[in-house]
Length: 284
Image 1 (cartoon, rainbow, N blue to C red):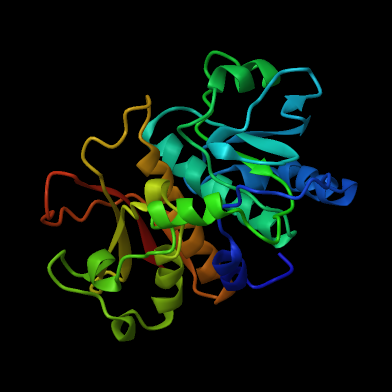
Image 2: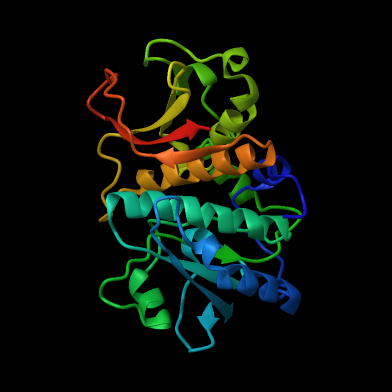
């Protein structure tokens, strides 16, 4: 990336109104080169995602398939379509891989918006000749953000509380779910944890929880499921954990903090039946 990952994470927001200007060939080529690098398509546990970039005009692709204006998206110039297996850890890794791609695109100056539950998967499946074993968890429109956002956009951000983030005391813990992890105790990792807090999530539910176990120098990531939330054939909040992981890891790398992702459930006492262990970051 050209810019600091901290700047890119803080800059990224959901864009729903775009300029009518087409994406430049240079930007399209850079996205294409990014997607040609296999390392950018593989999650920390080895699963691989696929992506298709679709250019559109008047909501119609080059193949003549109408792809719509999902979520009241206006003037977008294309889509990136994500493809992954519809399994628990597949969705986690998809969130990790796709958010890294979205941050790369953001660094180019291109606007995006995570869309997971309000688009016609059938239309996109026809556009990219989706196989029976493939699944489209999410897409993002592409375009250059309109400088003056519509009143609708601002209203939607207010309704979804997109700018409201939970406090550290609600999200990050030390040793158990009853003890808050302070920024001072997090030390060098405080910035990486803060980048998790700033991450996007479905309906801004912010379902990630982290417990730092000092004795083993490991950060355990949990998913605090929102009861009765996912009714669209897959658990979108698993993707949110992947997004949190990407923010955490990218920040660690920028700050020269080494570690690896492992699955090692510490069997901590959970705050409720909706909280589920997902993965851990072992500090090297």
